[in-house]
Each structure stands twice: as structure tokens, then as C-alpha cells.
Image 1 (spheres, rainbow, N blue to C red):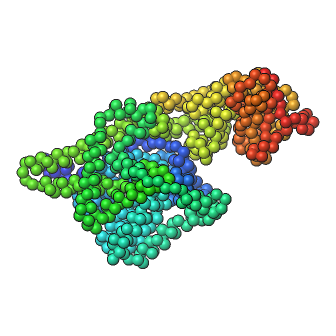
Image 2: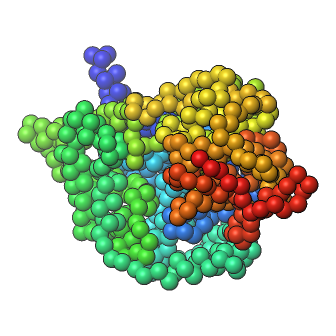
Length: 627
């Protein structure tokens, strides 16, 4: 008989809640090395780190998908953990912890307005929802939304349903916060407006006015930014352009809402090449997704049928963002529907709760039906969890181009290897692109090496050999520069990535290097900007070898290579990265068997840089290579 109380305690709501929260925490906080860290994450992390290091107070966030800058709210929030621990894992675990807390808040909110059964089901579904987990595990502004959205809705319930004082102020303040976290929350403006109309007799307009004022105060820094950039294509021009775009009407928001709430299409993280391999490794889960979708629709139907105060708020929370994005002037992305979390699961929990009430009869048949319903809900949650974990470990092992990015843990392993190889020399970051504000790998590397001297090299266009020695990390792409660095290396190591993804190659470069010239340019070959044209190669493509003689005043320079009708112009290597004594190998797409005239000009003025003779006088506008 002593076992019965123990069994009863194991089946108690308190134990069930604890188990749900532990699962939610494991799926969000576990394996932080298996998270993405792409350009957006890197730029947001860099801004937050600047704030945490007291280098700046951000007035804006990173750019958005609509071309309009984001508010700085997400930067401020991500800076909080970085005041304590300045590491990418710090911000990653912070957003995961907030989303774990959101599962508990979902439980408490649902318990108050829908009862224990609905609360446990809503929390369980939210805890194991694949996309809710995905949007909890990396440094992304919109990943901060769920906890604050729950606060926004909870304040609405307290103000409009329970008539509690000052919660309307909190509601408007949190409305401002969620909009500033991510612009997809603009969908909540008509939502709040509809609640003010429906519950107008319960509105304390003084509280509303104070809440609006408090929200406007939080937006003052961004308003300062917009005012400072009102002209010359700044914030005002971007806003005008955004508002003038033609609108389209489609069902993307409905499709993405279904995907987000049911966990559909998570195999897309495996990328276009490997998703079928992943799907073949897991059981079919479409029945689970249809179960979740049908439960959500059943809960929504119940809410629309009953039309109680709580029903109105929950149903409109689910429907308004979907309807808001039916008509749009910019593309709609799945992450815009994060604002729905966890509305659908609360409604699904309500449907399950009503089912349990209607079947609470003493007969064996009804008890069996209740048991089957409980087992289906639990089995669906277990299936979602199993498939998600299978996906997590799949993308940790297999390359997923077009899907999940290189895991953060592998990037940090590369950083440690490069630091060990640099011996306090500078670091060359060789990959696709050389501008951190535009290109992905430079953006990621820029923040990971922010406390070490580093430069960027577009490995498709150039290879750079500094005179003081350096360590170079070469990204795992087919780059023309890789062959040259392999020839120059005095030591080489590799950081192996996922299957089919290749490896980062780290090379140590010697100081005071000597470069053998198979085909030297004839004298004179020094230009007025200090560049000395050393030599050339014609295989496999046209290659110019040159040395930086001194660092000129700020200017951009391009090469020209003319051979009869053939011509190839390009930057060679951006002058903002030049260092005195650098030997640079620049690659151009040109084939020629005749004489080639090689020179430089300022860009964009196209002002020629003359070749100087030994006396320092202009000699010609180019040197000539004669294969």
C-alpha cells in the first residue's frame, strides 16, 4: 500500500510540470556548441559586446530583412549576460534560458485561465515544439520574443478580464518592447486596438496614456538615430521606401503558422542535399503534426464558439498576426510567426481539457478513451522530442549547405587553433569576401577574433604575405589563394568540420618572406602610390604579383589588365587592408598569349596612377608583360 502514495506523487501535476521544464531546459540549454553562428548572429553579438565592454551605447540594431534598421532593444537585452561572461555561449544560453522560462510562464498563464490539464498540455507541447526549440538556441533578435509576448498577453488578460490596476500600463510598455525586439510584432498594434474597442468599458485611459508614454521613452535612442540619419538615404529615406512598396496578398502567413506550430518542415535544416538522408533515418511524423494542428483548430473553434473574454483574447492572439501578414509589401518569413508562440498550444491544451471533462465518466469505455487521449498527447510529444534530437545530432555530423550553418563549437575550435598558431602575429582571414559588413565569413571571424590583430583576404581575388609573419585561416571553399598559402606555409594544421564540409586550414607564414618570380616585370615598375609591380603568371589564369611600398592616403585602387581585346579590371586587394611590405598575389579572369599592359587607377574617379622612373618622375601609365 505504501507504493500507492508514491505513484500518486509521481503522477501529480507538480511532478509533471517539473518533468516538462527539465525537458524544455535540456532541449534549449543542452549542447550549446551545436548552435548556428552566421552573419546576423555575429553582428548582433558584436553590438551587444560593444555595449557590455562600454565601447558604445547602440542607438540601432542590425539591419532587417525589409531593409529598415532594427531597434536596439535586442542589443540591450543580449548585452545583459555579456556583462558577466563575454563569450558567444553566454548570449546563446541567455536566450535559451529566457525561452525555458517562457514554458513555465505559459503553464502559469494557461493554468489561471484554462485549468491544470490545459496548462500541462500547453506547456508540454511548447516545451517539445521543434520550431520553438530551434528559435530558442541562437543569438537572434526574434528569439527573444516568446517570454515578452507572454508578458504582453498576460498583462492584457489581467487588465481586460481581471480588471487589475496598472496592468494596462504594463501591456502598452511590453507592446513597445516586443515591437522593438522584432518588427514582426507590429502585428500586435491592431490586436491591442481591437481589445481596446471590445473591452472599452474596462479601459483606464490614464493607464493607457502612461503606458504609451513609457513605451515611447524606450524608443528615444532609436528616434535619435533616425533623426541623425534623416537625409542622404538614411532612416527617413528607408522608411519612405518601405511604405511606398507595392503590396501582395497570399497565404504564406497561414502556411508558415501551420509549419511553426506543428513542427512541419524541420527537415529543411538538413539542407537541400541531405534532407532526404535525414528523413530516411526517422519515423514518419506527419500524423503527429496533424494531431497538433487539429487540436489547435479544435481549441480555436471552441474559443470562437464560446466567445468568453479569455476566448476572445486567445483566439485573436492566434489569428491577428496571420491575417496581418496576408497582405504584405515585403517577403514573409517563417520567423515572423514566432509571435504566435504559444497561443496555438494554449488553445490545443484547452481542447484536450474539454475532451477530458466530457469523457470523465466512470464506465470502463470512457476511462479507456481518456487513457487513449492522454497516451496520444504524450506519445506525440515523445515523437517530436525524438525527431528533434535526431535532427540535432544529424546536423552536428553531416554538412547541411543551404540549411543549418557550421556549428558554433567548430568555429570556436578553429579560433583556438589559429590563436595557437599566430604567436602574437596578425591573423589573415581568407575566405569568400573581405568585408564584414557584407560577407558572412568575415562577419563571423571579425567578432571571434575581435581582440586579436586581423585582416581579411578574399581568397578568390588575392593572397597576401605580410612582411612580419602571420597566421592564416583558410575557409573550406575552393579558393585560388589556398595553393599559394600551401607553398608559403612553415606549419599547417586542420580543423575538420562535418562530413562533406571540408576543414579549416591554418598555416603559419614566415617573416621577411622571399617570393620567387618566374616572370618579373621590367623596370621601371614602381607606381606613384608606392606599389611595386613585381611579376606575373599566366597559368592557370592571369596573376599579378606586387608589393605595397607604403600605405597611401585613404583611397581605393583598382588594377587594369589590357591585352588587345581582352581586359580584366578589379580591386586586387582593398587598400584599407594594405600594410607596408605586403606581398600580394592578385587573380584575374583573363587569358592572353600576347603582351599585357598592367597598371592601377583610383576608384571610382578612374584617375590613373602613373609608373615612376628612378628619378621619381612619371614614366608611363602602365608596365608591360610580354609572355
